[in-house]
Amino acid sequence: MSAVEVEALVLDLPPLPEEVFQDLLAFGGLTEEAKRAMRLDAEKLLEGAASFVALVYDHLSRHPGTAKALGWEGRVPEEELYLRRAFFAAWLARTLGVDTSAEFAREVYRAGLWHGGLGPKGAHIPPEYVGLSFAQVGRYVAERVRDVRPWLAYLSAQEEVMRKGFDAALALREGGVSVRFQALGLAQPALPKPLSLRALSVEEALRKVYAALPALRDVSLEPLFAEEAVGLWLEPKTLWRLRPRFAVLLNGRDVRYLQGLATPLAEGDTLTLLPPGR
Image 1 (tube, rainbow, N blue to C red):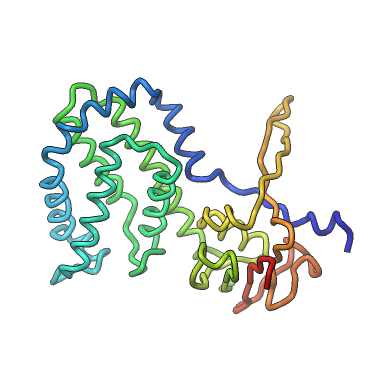
Image 2: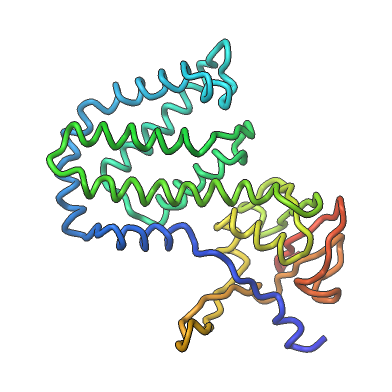
């Protein structure tokens, strides 16, 4: 096995949630000065926040579409309602504080994954309902601040990050054959339980898994800086390769000794991310 063949486990992955978030915030003109001005609105916005959270979830429980998606037809489970309201309240507090951190971007992305069916209940929340919920927040803010424009840019950036998480969750169930992906050892905290997905090749499966699980990328991949031709110019591009001594196994066999990323998958196959130290 040559070094060139080993290096073949290099993936072209979408940007991380925090990269998307920062790019959108910059595009929307959300400068540090703008964020400082927005934070001056926080006290006024927090005054009615608790009532707003209650109204939002009252609406979600009464609307037939969202009630069905949440499994709340007929009766709303009190414990689940409490947890969902608590999560929404925590998100709203961070939003009103104009949180633009990488950690917050990943939380927003994770919410999109949950809306796409990767949450504990596997519930699928249609994106149009999520968009309308963001619109409700925008209206709440608009009624209480002088200049709503930076708030709308900020909320739009969040909505797009969440949508990308939603799309990543849906992609796991599209096309190909049904396979299972699991992470062991040092990588297991990023994926505590095996993940079911559909794919035709090792590369397709890895692209889908790493798109859905940024934390798994953190622990098992490293950036590889490259260039790509864009018209007459070369633009910088980041690829991702497996960290040294990590391996990807297909039914127990290292894929680098098969056909690498091009290795085809069959129904019921198991892919395993194996870190060093086992």
